[in-house]
Length: 518
Image (tube, rainbow, N blue to C red; front, side, top):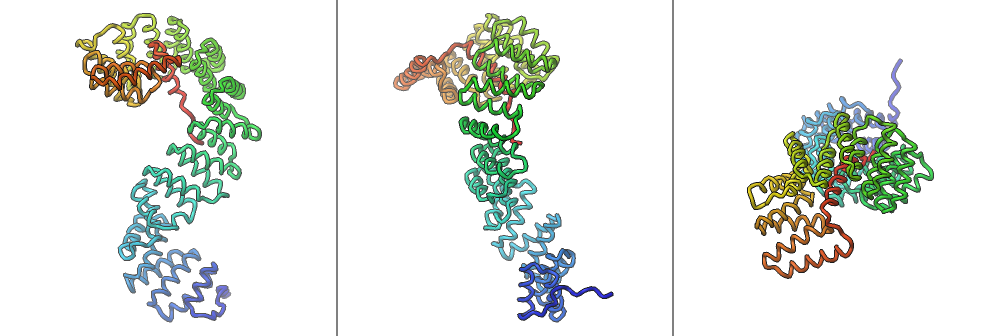
């Protein structure tokens, strides 16, 4: 039985190439192949016929035959770059990127502005995580880079990796409004780049049509919290809670927004709801007790941790929190027992040792704190807070920074700064020690940095004012001391023990990092 003739042996009213072009544009690839095969038989070395036949065969899914036609065209004329480009596209689509790259580079050697070649080279380099090289090609690919959402996302990712956040955000705003999946992915890449407000906008756009509206809503709320738009986050969260599934993790996230907006009672209530929905999830109890630590409601914090321990008696983190709360209440011996238990349960971390050191310093036993922190430091700990607290403990033993014994304290503060340059405390303490040693210029350098990192603590400002007075800069000294007076009038405390508590709470908070976008 003879095979049926292709649909388009229909007589063409125009020239064969024009007829074939029309058929290809309308998706009638089989018919175009028939027309072009006949034309090629009559003109076997005609470059345009061979190239167009390769395109029709590609459209019909006959890739190997198409590639043979492209190679025939190149054999007839190696400078005929359209055939080389089409062959390169087929090699790219087949996953043979090294060969595709070679061919596209040969195309650019003849046609340096070819947008198709630039786009595919951009995609090749994007897949290799070579964002700078990829970006250079995306920039030369014209409108083709935004012809499909996946290319737009890749282009924007490269812009973000090269620090061009506003351009990336504007590019992603051009994604089709109805393409919820691409909008969600745009939110993910913007969130990873810490462009939180832009990420929230993309997650919000994805909510209506995304396959998982809860994930889109959770991530929108999370991004608003990370952007510190707490009221915006609360508005979105309350809207979602009226209609979507209610989970403990979402109430936990909402509590962060309430804390940021200083709506503390509502934060408590949200976390209590989270714990009721997920009673075995320790994070809810940790976050509730952290709010209690922040607001010095230590008795309530103890109650919350104890409830958590009923469900998770082997939680090392809850034991650490309980120990810290006991330290804050002044029950040092009980805290020591909690920390010993926490060490056996894990996870590790500096919180138990630092909290104990703080308690001992408050009790006037700074030498005991020094021994503990020295041991922790010698064990290879790389947390900035350990040398920071060691330096404070050494100073509280009465060492003089101007004497040889003071070198250890100064070295500890310097080590803390190297480990975490964003901490204001070590710089303030180092500046104070250098000032006492008579190294005024270096003291000013550290104190200026400390006051820029933490402008609301009077102590470093006062020390900086004294340093400028020593240097003869009376105007600057008076300006700083006026700021100190204003802060004191506002009730800002420079109580050293309060600063120690802040250090401990900061360590505890670092163990409760926010969840990443889903």
